Length: 365
Image 1 (tube, rainbow, N blue to C red):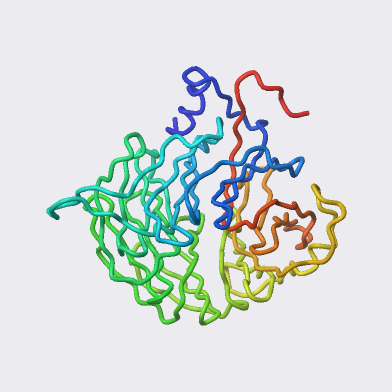
Image 2: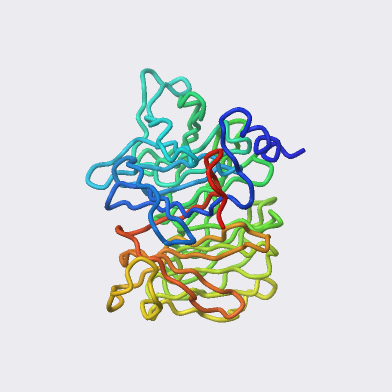
């Protein structure tokens, strides 16, 4: 049995929680301006919980089982150096992890500043955080919060982290140097820096088959395709205006990419790298908003976070955060249009999702 499947069966016995498929669907939203992680009820559009994390939360990752989330507190006014580990069921911060410790042969303690991107390693006993200011990928034990090691990289900036399917490699994208670092997990060493033809690399996504990584290049309006096995750039093709976030449908046939400057989402055919359609988000404000029916006029539309909930199931849904406009949009990929918007009290950045419910809580109708 898959480890996460086993854990999901045992958790009701050990911690009194239920993770059934009919548990409420929640969207987790980071807000750098507010220093918060919001838990939004998808069905009602209401904010069920507001979790205070660190200053300037940016990167967000959810464990494979959905029971934990980690937020990178990069800092808004000064460079931060903490992570917030959150229990998605109790909706509380389990531990504030200070990215400080003795690493390797270096004397004394080292502080790793400005963590910007995070990811859980398989099994969720370890996580990795890309420290932009210290130019290191930091390894952290989730049970203790201890720093286990760090892998320095040469790339400048750090905006995305992807773990290979077998957990042996971690890829880090560098927007300022137009490159992607490859880190060996077992040795905790950077083994390669992939120099891309384009520049301004930001978000990345792994194809469902685990064979390719697509990297968006904001400054050159393009997308690069990297082969995971050889760590070589295979090709580059044109994208929309300042691509920002990217995600694949579960079957791998389509890739969705947000266009930050044009307020739209490009949908690509992964077989031929051609644009299928472009979904405009500019008029999303004309759709009734669940928590504010009197809302008027669309503020600036800058799509950032993009995700699929319940991927590969009949419950699969698509959401995108509109940075700067305090909204989340839901998309219908059959009609390729916005079908709903949810008003938030703060400006969103990154999105995650979870299905958790306290034991004995009433089931959704």
